[in-house]
Image (cartoon, rainbow, N blue to C red):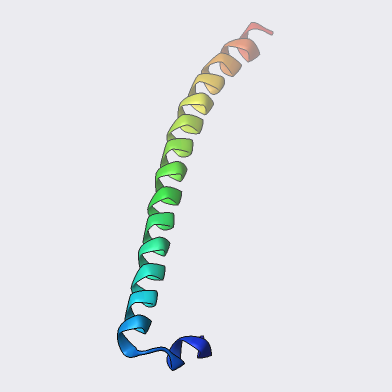
Length: 59
């Protein structure tokens, strides 16, 4: 962080803004991937549970 303070104010703001934007983008991508995975696994689990119950009841 100390390296940034030696830079001019505008440059520092730009670097921080760029890093913040990257962090926000990564966060959004992470959340999107998480929600997609969650939705998929929930559906898979529901399907698995239904088939599992049927299998259990068969035996």
